[in-house]
Length: 117
Image 1 (cartoon, rainbow, N blue to C red):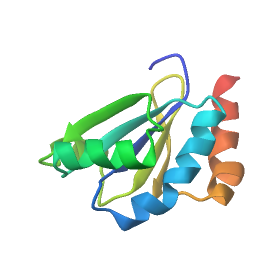
Image 2: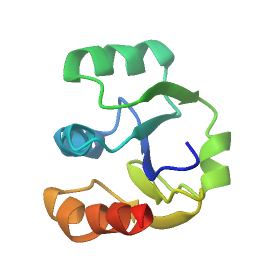
Image 3: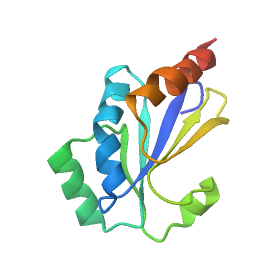
Image 4: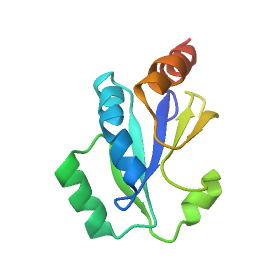
């Protein structure tokens, strides 16, 4: 992913707030922003069924973190959490909780644009 800005979205099929933000992720996908999904402490079959039912906004899916070890490395406290990673591979923003359309326009898109220059 180095060389481009992208998002890491930590989610789970059992997470109510993840369902709330799911349509916002499609907005980002439609704008051409790569999103990697990290499925947190979930059953793989449940995660796949959730994506089949609601759609899959992720470029890479699912990266399963059933025990939560990878999430610990990222500093995740719960789901959902979303990270903006710049084209150098540096985390430039961490959003705790569901992202909204306002978050996309006021924070995430400007950071993505800044990363392109």
